[in-house]
Image (tube, rainbow, N blue to C red):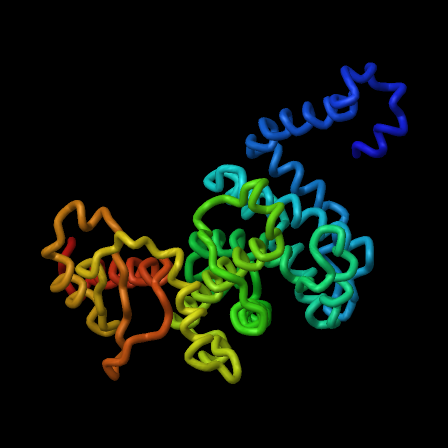
Length: 343
């Protein structure tokens, strides 16, 4: 932008000094005003729809994304990745999930890139954003994973399994493969040094290691999403449990993956607030184990592990999805007429 404006300097006031050219003042004002503007959720919603407006949702699986579409998705994801790391998540995440077409548009793009083995050319074309040897799916997953994960915390069983919203079960099976392969590359083939992921990406830190920061961020959001999808698969299988396991894994990889999946859990969750619940005795087990909790404990975090009819714990880490499943089932059981608890 500064280079373009510099060639049309006649439209700007005279430079205040050699060190402070007028186009620098223009950029400073743009940055200052954009910080205020983009913090308003309506603006973020409009900006996202503009960025994704020219990208088709109807392209078939075998239709390779062209250069124009790759550039548009790359620019949009770069903008949104920065937004997710700098703006208040409470407002922007809901806006992106429910007032834009971000999830279906990005998924359609990623699916076609994966099917047509387009990721390498995506990396080359987006070299102005990230080095050419960076995975082509890096920016897309950095934006898609947290937004889709946010949607999954709200949908119920009917929407997920019967209505197949926001993605079809067939697409989710394909997504599991993409996430699994991405995590394999990030955590095993090309691991990055761990960093404090809880802190937002600052301008100073992003200048030092932008690719490493994004890779580390994607390893977290992708593993959290994969964990959440595994929770849904444990409730009712839509794919084989083995689809969540990478081929040829060893203990080192498992340790890294488990650490990434559990990193979002609070250290303040006490052991006494973790419960093993038998699915076929959910009401009885919940009452026996939780009735002794204080009001403060009941208001705090509670983690549930389900046990099947053979006494074996079901897989998955409770990042909220398993507890949601527990609440739905215990509510249904408590109001079942055969228990006679209510009239």
